[in-house]
Length: 186
Image 1 (spheres, helix red, strand yellow):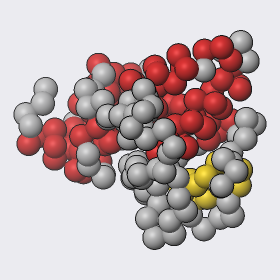
Image 2 (cartoon, helix red, strand yellow):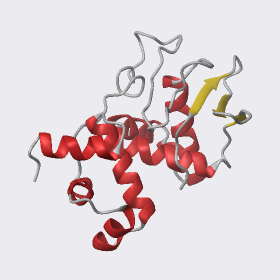
Image 3 (spheres, helix red, strand yellow):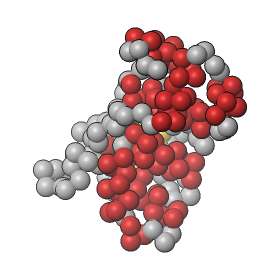
Image 4 (tube, rainbow, N blue to C red):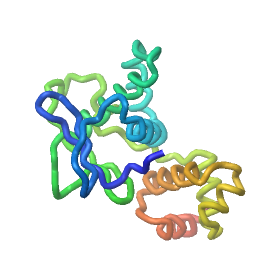
């Protein structure tokens, strides 16, 4: 699965969502951009479950076409949270942290999804599996060792690590480990 870092999203006046990785040309987010859609959907589901649930419900009539359904969920999340092209401040930084923007929306103040999908609340609770990964990083194990210990892929370990860093608001594994010991986690 693609790592979602160093990306600027923006929406054209026609409502087209554009993806601009740092140092690369921009391209239109389309239904067949499965790497980006799947990676974004996983992040939305794991870090912003209220937004994920609301969007899945909103687009449930499209659920028979999974590719289209997932694309619509991600497209809407991006449109509601990353609107303008900002060369100086990217939307998803090198740590994978989302930098939400105030998006100009004609439904501002009326939308039932405001505060749920737009600028959603980060779910700070770590899952049991994230705690397992966190504990093993605190024991100084490397990604491959953690994957072997937990019988999961290194990509899954990396996804859990990035979610942990986002949820505890740190930027590196060393800061993660320091947080573990500073908070006497077990």
